[in-house]
Image 1 (cartoon, rainbow, N blue to C red):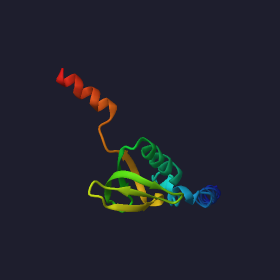
Image 2 (image 1 turned 60 degrees about the vertical axis):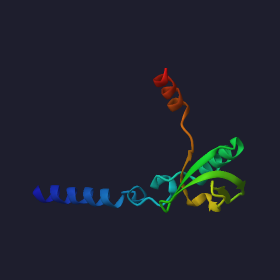
Image 3 (image 1 turned 180 degrees about the horizontal axis):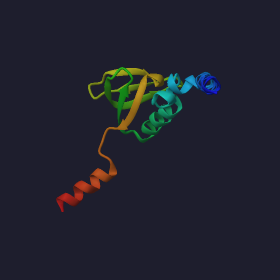
Image 4 (image 1 turned 45 degrees about the vertical axis):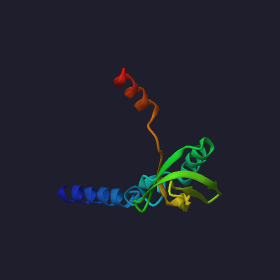
Length: 115
């Protein structure tokens, strides 16, 4: 009887280990790794370009650039810094995109503190 229970448990364990999905343990896509998809980054950059607002771009390399979007393309965009330096960046290289100024909530909060 003991032998049957041991074999049954061994089979259940083997089946469980064999049926595990390795995609959850080893993510390969940008979405699974926590990076935003290229289409979302592209849409955010287009929004900042149309509003002519300053933008802060965090690259996957860890570098951070601030400036205005001066040119858009299907695979890249140009970011012009205050110094006049133009950087051509690929959408795939961008980790995060933020507006350069204060948020509306921060501005309202500061106005309440002044009053």
